[in-house]
Length: 183
Image 1 (tube, rainbow, N blue to C red):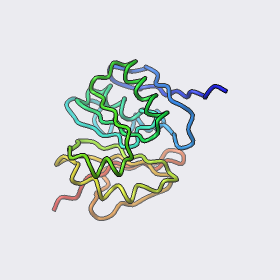
Image 2: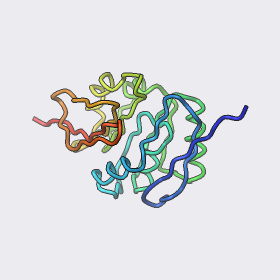
Image 3: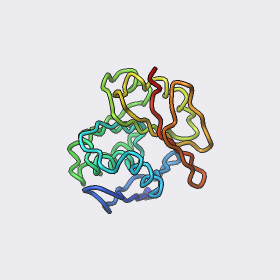
Image 4: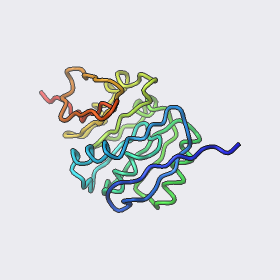
């Protein structure tokens, strides 16, 4: 029995219109084109020089989109071996030398890596309930004006440590751009 391949298109930057393929998986729901367009408008289309982290890379839609738009480095994390293989194949196909792939549990990565990022894409599988556990781990990993993108199945309000810079809803997806509150 052949495994079903799914596809998502990069919508902007140097790899605009290139297709990413990834395996069928219950927890994979690539960020839709319309939402990605909005998010990258919020981030300012050109990510030249920025360091990004895609903590639940999945299809790679957000991470490869960031790399396509000029990010200097995109670290993509996923724990699933099949998904990781697909990410690696897409990285090779695009010759995405600025993409670093790490197969690891997201919580373990946040507790072991000391780098700082300009943008962190935090879109865990909805059923995992990991968002409230991971958000407190992010501040030491954010650059001074760093931003965190989240996607949730219902309206969600972060704790007082975070300011919601932008938020929107498309279909059943609630998404927002967060920044740390600096006292």
